[in-house]
Image (tube, rainbow, N blue to C red):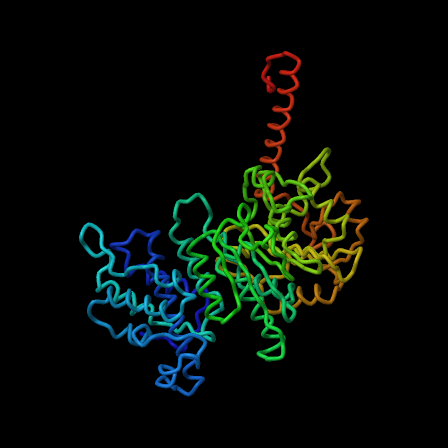
Length: 508
């Protein structure tokens, strides 16, 4: 049964994907379901968008077949979903030929859509026979995936669900790369792209933040030809999500360059002299509290970490410094990080690496705003996130806007979400630099200094009279940081004792 008029909300999407996975459950290991389902979702998404373009042109398929420049991209006849769905024999070979034909017609999709051989065998037998492929195609035919049918990053959301449903046992939580749709929309409104901007995401995942920035720009300026277009740049370490980012940029006809690789150790966007390339706007939702080796910072050749080396237990301010170093002289950035990154270490005796980095950014007047979000919005944690906005040319020098959005959400299952009203209320407060009772407060830099560089909005703005409580995630990071400091002191003490000729273990 086809539901071509039905809109794919998150619950419907997940049910649909689960049903598709069940079709091939027998012969395929659960973690590999995505390897067969995602390329077909890619193909259907392309086909449905192409079909929409044809309808806008008046169903002139024969003219488009003769002149491919009439459409933003061209899908060969054998790869169009109605023809795929009608195929009854040699389906594995047919699908493999179809995705390869798409890649030949659209060079930007080489290595993106044509990586799966649907005719693949193991021990002389087909991994997925034609019967199961046919059932899978029938299931995937239930919903349209055109631009008006689904949210922009349908690919990222599908992948996130499949990862979460079938944990791959890699020691990392599924969904680490995916930014919820509403948070991405809010980030785009905060970033507020201007004509001609170059926008960079160093941890771009499936490209959701870049796509939302593009769509926000289109909301503001339409498709006016006299407005300088945006250019997008992203880097992603995971090959599958890298491919999805390329696919998303392709579908929306964005001027985008997406690179694969490890941003923190090998940034892809550099100048001829080896320096970092710099951009007008930078945005990211990197994995929170990553554990990078000290050598990542100490051996850096790009000058990214002059304001302090973050603790091994949390790279949040490592990412922040990379992003800040990637801004041009008038640039602005917005990033999502763990809540504790704006408060850890404040009020404690002695040195604290995260607090010391925050101190530099506050005193040099680069912190423009900090926004606390509601709990249970993100897919890999129930903890609230923080959006930190850093700006090299602040609209209100000497001031920081703190927004406590912890009450701005609607209850959902399994996750909470932001309504359009929630998004608008928060974005309007930031863009209008407004103080609103129970939601936002503007502070002077000296107030942040008095609070030992604690920038947690809940410290300054009471939201439903909730007390500021240390979360489990923050406590784990603080414990790891304390252990790291203890080991450093032990090592230093041992060195001193050895110099004195006392061969004694430092921790005795």
